[in-house]
Image 1 (cartoon, rainbow, N blue to C red):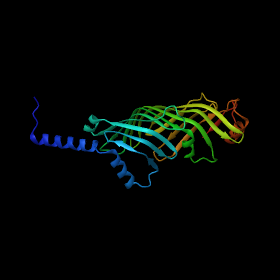
Image 2 (cartoon, rainbow, N blue to C red):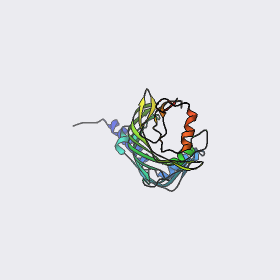
Image 3 (tube, one colour):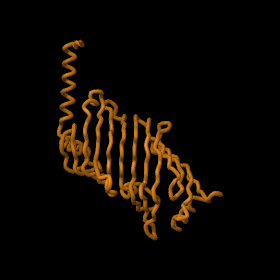
Image 4 (cartoon, rainbow, N blue to C red):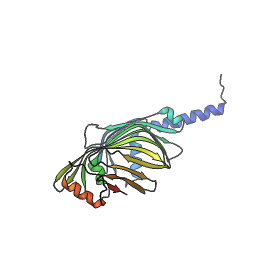
Length: 254
């Protein structure tokens, strides 16, 4: 039978008390404190219910992206080993103008730069996301971006990433009307501490490309594309700005 010294029992009891104290704090108080300390955060938060252990927010809005009925469950066992492991769920999976999230995210209590995720699914409205991207010309896109992450580990840089990204039912509003771009799929991974997005070529642009993004925000793009014959004339005209096509009709991306 394991016998612990009295001082160890005191330490264990104190640590347990702190964990329970933090976990059962009303979530509304914590959110209010964070908002007061960071008044410029671009996030609008609705009614907060529950505790840090288990809670709910009826509405979250950030950069034009709406997430309804966001819920979380904090793992007690993970706290004992210094991890904040949270099961999250929110939004509407079938409503394309809203966000959706479901899965598990974790953060180290001792290293603010160490994050991980497992079996995480995120859906975002393309219109709101594209609106935040600085493009040479204004573009109104629609559809939905979907990200499925099987596993992700981050510690100052990308250490492990296994997942896929998709643009579902993509459309872009052009001078002559709405252009149907269809569906796009990419594999997500890490390479030499950088994020890698490999676009698969089975799409209406025959786009086959790789994007490598570093922690400094700099990226390298390489690939090729050839608009399908079914695409409208304005798409083929726009493609000419990427230079001369090769013998197979592909234009290079660099």
